[in-house]
Length: 193
Image (tube, rainbow, N blue to C red; front, side, top):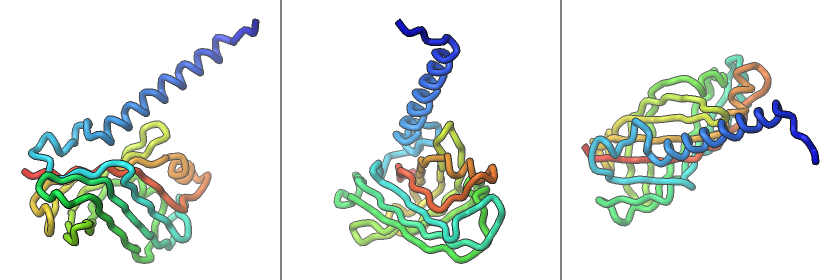
């Protein structure tokens, strides 16, 4: 019978325990069970869940030193459900940013962002959001909170949670790689106040 070194077994146990905790945390955040869940503030007007996603590319790829780069972003939301707009099933957002100085360090920073979503019903929603980023293990979690400033659901609060692999971002910030693109799963909650 082969003996397993207790140190190896201990490391494996720590790794598996940590992995299980990270997966549980990610699922809880994406399910809206986190402390910023929009459901706590009012009636849920609309929600979009996975496989909703966001894909962003950087040209040229980001490094840890600021350089001129352009972003291109595409969001696909769905399935979406809404009690107040029964025909709402999906949405999208896309933009190509301007050429400006960027680095991968800004991916971990906070800031304000405005997003315009086009819904399958033909309506649009403009959202003014504050963005915060945390890294939990190998997962980068971006939380955007704010309000719908115009269009469908105007006046409602919004919580958007994006989860993506953090490996490339962390390597880039350490000067050991670049970030050419980010793929994130997305959960969005729009709540009337």
